[in-house]
Length: 309
Image 1: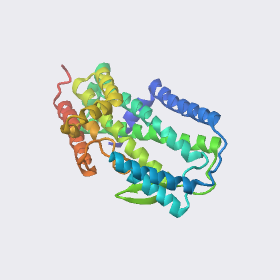
Image 2 (image 1 turned 90 degrees about the vertical axis):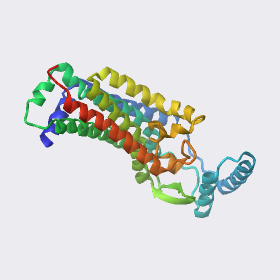
Image 3 (image 1 turned 180 degrees about the vertical axis):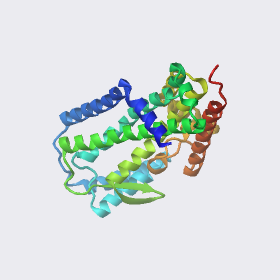
């Protein structure tokens, strides 16, 4: 399996397009950093921030009574800040920049989908699949090595984004004067979390959408041997899937069974699920079901396919 992984890794990095994708990710991150530095304003601490938060809580409580909207999270975090003397505003620093550039995870996902869509289909298009299958190696191992390569490539892209953002952010904006905790609200309780740990968790949760779509692209590539179809459909769903699912969820309760209603697990920590009654356990189960279906179709059809046809 290790040799198969090495072989797939070498194939990816023999393509000039791979280096172009990495360069694009780095350049766009750098442009975001330069733009953020250009727009940076002098930080001025509010000496009356505690009073401001108290007034904000009173307004939120009144609004909650009138509109029945849930502002418990905002109120709880404000109260925690007042109690533990944690100002809501702080000078822009390296971790602020890393959090902002996390929006580029979708770009890393786009590149991962492109690699995933072509990793099997290209073998059929170039005719090199026959050279792979004449070896005394189980077909499942060959396909598994390709899928593991996709996961490693996704991890590489996320790692490049995180590390480069951190280095660039430290150069442009500096480190915070003191440890900056992230205030996490879950099950009615506010807890302090290390900002780096929070960012790593956020990266992990934000990449679930990418992994699921890359898995779908991998399945389409294996089943239909068409990289264009896999890339086109996966990218279309990457940018529109969540929006369409949200629109359906407004009218139909069965929308909770759609893949994109369950990919954003961060909603269970920092928001509300798409439909009332949805739980993290439900979303994880749905993700596992979709993942199993995609993998079953990819492996079953790949093993049964007549390559000579």
